[in-house]
Image (cartoon, rainbow, N blue to C red; front, side, top):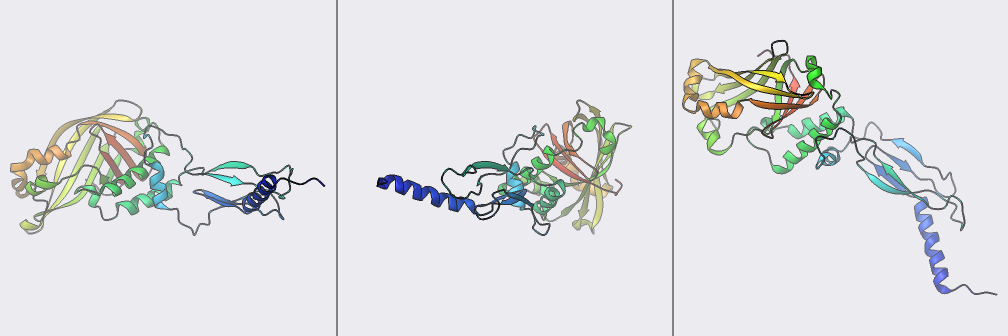
Length: 301
């Protein structure tokens, strides 16, 4: 009787052990999971959709977009795992143990990404007084997720979607340190809504920043900036500053000494790339590297 070398016996034992483990493998992906059947049942994998009661991880969705090129409009896999097919465990089995790649088909649906984005923006006061770097990266990742699924890739050819009133919910423009102190935005004056009304037919945009002056018997006022725009490309507009005013006069007196500083922060002149727009949300990036997230508003400026 021919003896089997110890090394070959050990190799066969390990191979069978690996097959048994692989036969019961379960893999998870962002968009769903596949259950691999044991050797005693079907060797085919059965895809399952995530139950609706299981929320999409906002952390996973945000991190999937970090490092992506914002110019890219194509989705790419967010998760890759090696998955073992089930087998009978017998040497020479035609099924064998094979590895295949399973990809998440998308980062997440637009409504899920938006929900994660609003969650990330909660309590940030539009980012105007600064955002921790980790939170800023999270928001950037979610923004790029939406940009990659932009339903309006040629927004300047569909300006009807851009027109109307919008409210700012986040911007990377910040007012920090001595600028915040000079403008009285620490204790004396509160910032209200930031609104933008776009008049497509006239090629005009009116930005309104609302203020509440606690030091003036809760006086309400606003900075109004009017600008003109013209289409520069399928997704970009060039913006020209026209004029600005602060009302009422009492509030103008408060800002008069630092009016140029205030206007320098909010002056929209330059160009704006419209990177995402649908019926309820718009995202843009300007020539200064700023990001703007706005939501559709029924309020008039």
